[in-house]
Length: 162
Image (cartoon, rainbow, N blue to C red; front, top):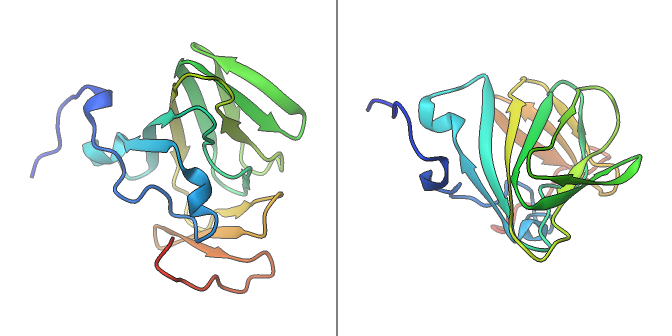
């Protein structure tokens, strides 16, 4: 099957599995919808997602990467970027980047009363490790997938609620 040549981003199907986090963290992503765009074109070295955040929703748990760079560009609405420096409002047309290895955890939260939409771009570096400073969670990219553990590296018990 040939990948599409072009498409309207909002028409891209949402990710089938809303979150790859283990329970109970997956439930914390309620109100976030990711539309994987890069995958539709067969891109494998980096991901591009159109992300919609309902009021009160968050992009992810606050985190930072050892090897992956990330970039976000706000298309509609307002989101609050949470970093070690505190909250920063990002409005349509604003962008932010997160260099690997900087140790500064980040996340976006929609504190407004309206949906927010942004583009999210990140590479897919094998062996990338993710630190979640506010939660008992760690992750590593192994064979193209995220493997989650507690911070002490003990595995999460899978109970079908990932």
